[in-house]
Amino acid sequence: MSERDAPIGIFDSGFGGLTVARAIAELLPEEQLIYLADTARAPYGPRPIAQVRAYALECLDRLVDYGVKVLVIACNSASAAVLHDARERYPVPVVEVIAPAVRRAVAATHTGRVGVICTQATATSRSYDDALAAAPHIELTTQAAPRFVDFVEAGITTGDEVLAAARDYLAPLQAQQIDTLILGCTHYPLLRGALSYVLGGGVQLVSSAEECAQETYRLLVRRGLTRTAPGEPTHRFLTTGNVEQFETLGRQLLGGFVSDVGSPFATPARGDAAPLE
Image (tube, rainbow, N blue to C red; front, top):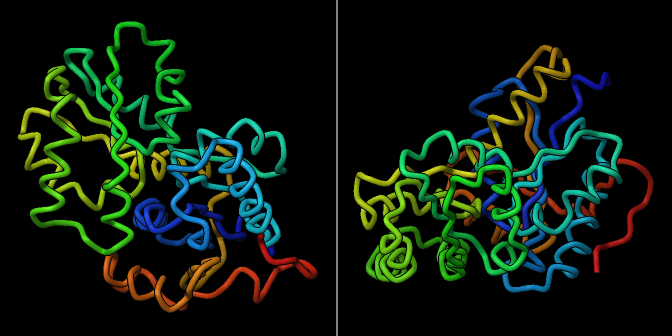
């Protein structure tokens, strides 16, 4: 297989990165995807950064074993923890979710007041603050919103509980009169309806998932890595946790996009691979 025809490797701690995978599939419908979710150890958000780094690198190592041509870290917590290490560690290019979303937010805001909702790990890392260091005119307000991840992982994307949590988390951002909100966790686009309802029409939502997909498209085209092989692409979905549960919830959240879920332990591409611990 040529490098151009190798799959795109996508990693997330759980289900949120499926929003990135679907966005990439829509932009690059001829590409093959391998999606690896570390659901056995999710969520990453409440974990210490050092632990997130160790877990994420194990999973990214496994994706590289499958011969991918690019790694997409479809998780804000993992991006904050491992990006520098990953770009030095792997022979393939690495795309993450933070910088593309920041660039879009800077271009979108009219007032300079930008908010970001994210996991506690991402908030603690101050990765969005660092990414905005070159834009001193931007006033960033960060709000950790951990319950949103719990809702999505349970297949709950609307209802009174979601709306109540949205009002609670978004109130400090509304008090700062933001006009742009970065969805700083790839789970959050699945809650876009509730977020838009609470915020109203005056706040633009920037999806880190969609911006990551756009960055992946640009990278493949710029480096001449788009797929040339004939025939329909096939996608693989792998989870370190319960395969049946992942497929059931994946189908509930994203319909027929998720299918044929397997385990990364069952069929390593190159030699034998020990289970993740």
